Amino acid sequence: CWDGGDCEKVFGDCIATPDTCQGGFINYIQVDDDPFNQNQCDIMNNNEGCCWDGGACKKVFGDCIATPETCGTYLLQELGDTSCNPVLLTAGCCWDGGDCIKVFTGNDCIVTPETCSGADINLLGNGICEIGNYIYFQNTTYNEGCCWDGGDCEKVFGDCIATPDTCQGGFINYIQVDDDPFNQNQCDIMNNNEGCCWDGGACKKVFGDCIATPETCGTYLLQELGDTSCNPVLLTAGCCWDGGD
Image (tube, rainbow, N blue to C red; front, top):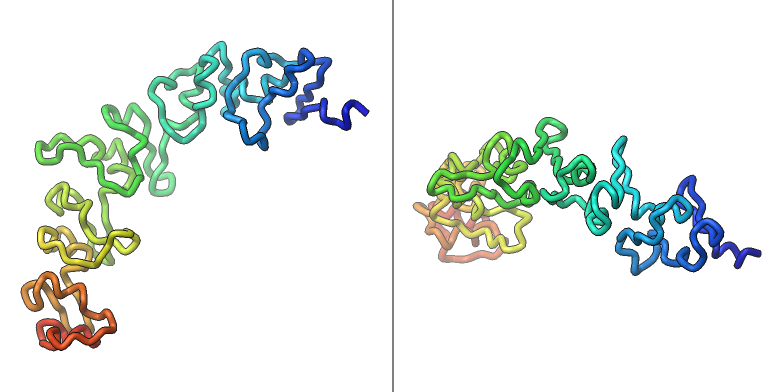
């Protein structure tokens, strides 16, 4: 029974068997559910009879096909892994399988190595504003060609938007954000200004018609307002009566 079907490897429209794939080498063809599969092209199986090593030796990206002959045997496995490798920016490597084209804000902004030259394109959209040596005005990714660092340099808090231009350069990365695991809701006095959106709201606590700020309540006390625990020290108008606690 042809080894219960074990000797027939199917890859799309291609079928590899011991007759087509040089006998024993068929067991070394890459398969997706193999825990040891590193998607690395085995040059011994780089032929049609072995289905181009189960596709590991023939990477297809739209109308572009990368092979060991066009891209190198050991580089193929890096194509299409979402990480842009400048070495693979060649037609033979299908421009790194599209990894070096980053799309942000829907489809409105597209980054390529040409538009974002001199920067590490892999850092775009990682949540950190990569503003380069901002103090020397040598920004690397905070520009239109890099889609403003993939949106990382624009922090939105309600109707307020903080950018490196409004928020004193590098301090923008220290603005409090709700999904930051290290967020202690503590007011950073360096970001206590409108351009930094009052430190993302950490320096401006609003309770109805009452607003508490470092000037009225103290910098380090603001974080305790509205935490449901009543603190008699905060029972002042400037602290909005402990935020109602």
